[in-house]
Structures are given as structure tokens and as C-alpha cells.
Length: 255
Image (cartoon, rainbow, N blue to C red):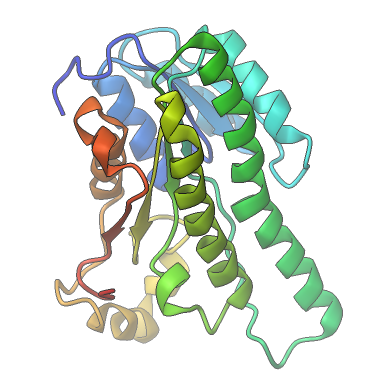
């Protein structure tokens, strides 16, 4: 993506203090955008990233996405800090290993509720408020949702995660149809294993080698590779890809 491809664009990236989100924020900033770096608890990391991004006008924005009212507040804060909103990237997510059997009901329900709240309800609320602002401002906006290959292949170690990401794919495609007439394109990226802090424990040791053995390329993705896919889908050139869910999993799962 060229250095000025997103010049003047205002971009909100959730879960941007580390991992995929941080890579996405850096990529947009290098392409000329002003970026809202959302975080939940990692204030220091988010503020440091926002201060180090090239260009100016970036902001670190806090929101607890498990709170159903957070979407409205975060969208409003992003629009105030950035002067509006052109692109929303719903990247924030949580993962808990919680198999269907072998756990008490309280633990199961707690993790189910948290993963659905953060991974599905929060993006839906943010899409609602961001799209309304884009429409009122006459912006031909972009929404890119970061999903997972688990939405399609299943997540036996965490059914709630798989269900939340499958729901996110359905939300993405539903909104692509609903918002297309308003000039807003909505798409998704579905990564497999990515070498992030969140995935580190799952990719370590013999268990990690076994997981990566299922990837024909023999490695996890770099966060920057996912970021490149997000930028492509948010670009002017990819408008006609609205409704698409782009698999970026190293051929570890083919639909």
C-alpha cells in the first residue's frame, strides 16, 4: 500500500495496543491515516504506540467492550479525537479454552458470555454507531471485521469463540448488503494462527509444533501479513469486495 493511500482518512482500530491491532494501526498510519488506538487496560502500550505512529492526529482511546454501552461512547470519542470516521476495524477479541465438557456450568457461562459480548456484540454495536456517523457525514466508509478460521472449521476447545466468530461473519455479510446503498463497504479477514502475544502459549513447545504442522507453510502468520489484508479491504480498490470474508490462514483450512 502506498504511503499516501489513506491520507486524511480517520481510522478506529479496536484492540490496537498489541498484536494484530497494533500492526494494523501502524500500517494505516504509514499509509497516511489518523488512527484511534483503542485499548481496554493497556493504557501505557496504547499511548506509546499512538505517540510513535508516523504522522499526526493519532489518539489512544479506552473502552471496556464487554460493556454494552461502550460502542456508542467509543465511536463518539473516536469521531471527536479524529474529526470523524472513515474506517472502522473491529479487531479486539478474547479467547478462552473452555471445552464443552469437563468444566462447571458457572465457568462455562461466564466465558460464553464474555466471548460473545466482546467478539460479537461489541463489534455489532460499534458498526451501528460508526455507520450512522458515516452516513450522516456522507462518507463512503469501510468496516473490516477481524474474524477467524474457527468460524468455519469449528473450535472444539472453545465453542464460544467459534460461535462468536461465525456470528461476526454473518454480521459482516448482513451489513454489507444493508450498508452498500449508503456507500459503505463491509468485509472480514479470517486469520489462522498468528504469532502474537495472545497466541504465544498455544504455539510453544510440542503442542505448538503439532498445531503448526497443520499449516502447509509450516509457520504462523506475522501480524503484518494480517494488517496488509485489512488495508487492502479498506482501500478504494477493494470496494467491490464488500461482503467478502478473506481467509488468511496459510492454507491450513480451505472452504
